[in-house]
Length: 209
Image (cartoon, rainbow, N blue to C red; front, side):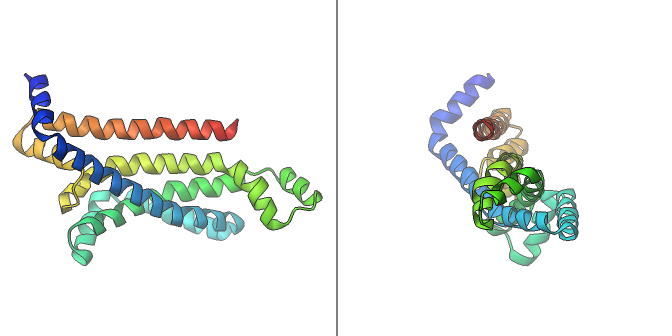
């Protein structure tokens, strides 16, 4: 029975399963952190320069066309196998939605709000802190949500180059024709992505209210 096989796996390999979850989450969190550090500042800069905005947006969209697996194999030839190429590939995947949504968020700040702030004597820094960032925040977080869900899902490919994670269960299940391992790995990744999406949706709604 499939259910019995799944229960037996957890009874015998719970510690190893938790290690896979830890590896998967660690890689995903690190990737989204670096993506935010790159994507948000670039998005803010690009919204102030239309030509730069178009160039950066087109470049970021081009990155999304390239499959993550292709990026992984390309990086292997330069860096080798392990965590580093997987992290770089996931960062490249995470930057575009964050960058684009950040740009859109700052562009969507109503001009009247900015003019009102200037009329109240706010400096550029105060306008950024008290007007622009709060209004752009929901857009930025939407980009972060999209990026993180993609990163969590794509992190399964890290197994191909020895970076560990829940993808180990999925690819082992494929190789051994073990449906229990496929389900455990696939459902775990789906649950993490779904929970992350719900949590970030909650933050976005709170920021709007």
